Length: 114
Length: 113
Image (tube, each protein chain N blue to C red):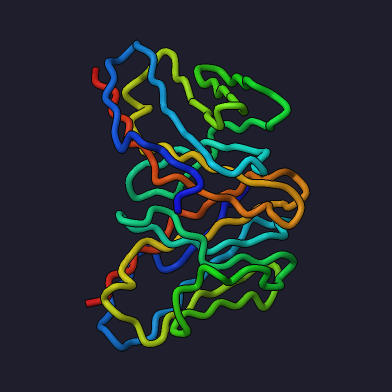
């Protein structure tokens, strides 16, 4: 079975540019999570969706960040405009809500904003 | 404030010996705990979990112990292998509307041959 698929794996962009990260959750999963990992703050939950509906976006750092889930098999995390402090690894994860709290991560998108 | 704390940023163990990774939490409403392992350049992978109704869960070389009164859990790896070298994250969640996972900052384990 395919796991959570993220793209791009690596992105280097200039400050001020728009960045779009994409995620395909595991088929059949109904919860999707966007995390950011940095050395200082570890794994931070940015936003999560249940059945395509955003449930908790309290972790989204600022208005420059937005996330959408137009259907059960696709989500995007957008940063506009990007800043150097946004450089981090962004993970997408999914789970089947009723199967406990175990979530399954993608391999991450490594973002560098210069 | 960190609700889930992994106070040891790193740990070094000899191959074949026991690795013990610790995790403390502050929220008594947490009732489900998980350990994840993360290799460089990969996403975290689920390792083992425990519900608050248990005090021990074992899966092969990995055992998680939960001490609810002390709000403490630990992950034991016996025997440790070089392939276990990774960052280990502890996570906790509650029930109902409080199912969001809260993560520790991780402990980097090095198993030396």
